[in-house]
Length: 314
Ligand code: TA6
Image 1: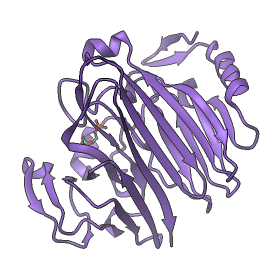
Image 2 (image 1 turned 90 degrees about the vertical axis):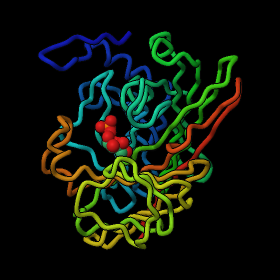
Image 3 (image 1 turned 90 degrees about the horizontal axis):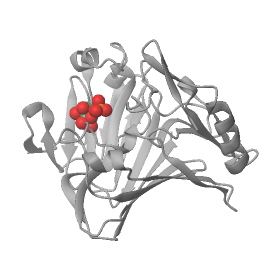
Image 4 (image 1 turned 45 degrees about the horizontal axis):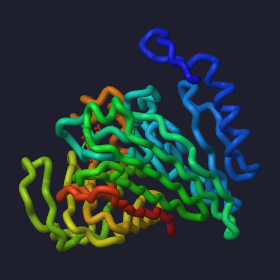
């Protein structure tokens, strides 16, 4: 039983969390591939390591991938130094799992999935050497009081030289429901002013900075010189981030996720976010893959599955 005590303004898990984490490691750990350890604020996290040298860290809280170090040893995800690691609050960085609501609405911003602790369903080292973690989340009465549609979620992380994510949602109710969802990925860049997003030319976008006004992207390479918050609708299944300062390209490949969101808060919004450092905006860009523009309907008992894969090249 993991009890949470409040000391000051941050909950500190009682020492009882240590035995729980040990038990999870005993059950799910795989030497040289998977370990369950105590992360920030004593929250449990799963560490995946691949023989190529790549590694990933996933908190059970929110099924939140907070780190992906590729085989060169460099961190590819941004994590704010001000990020919260507290039950009921989202972690600022990595891959926030967004379900069943993207953005603002009747639920907390970006929905419920990132606010709750998930369970470890399975850990594997595949014959290929790839390492796979599956987490799951079942709707609880507390969640259903906010969103009255029973669901079962699965979140899979596949680590090899690349990193791939599978998100599944099953409608476990007797009625259809509709949802929006995304993998809200924060990428680490050396300098946002020397960063471009490629592959969205000709795509229709809704610009949150222009009250959702629509336009067609005319640029082959999207550059950043201000707050940027744009939903690209029915975007191609492959887009790229060009980190010119590091001379590297991150390729993002999606399936069964129609939209791409591009976001950088820039100066003023960065200052308004308590869990984001005022001077951190130059070192990150969000390129998110999602079902954002149009809600996805899911029939009673039906299963929805989407994928996103991240790879790095020079
Ligand atoms: O994906 C872009 C966005 O919707 C922005 O509008 C901004 O709100 C960002 O997500 C972060 O949202 P969060 O709720 O994590 O602070």
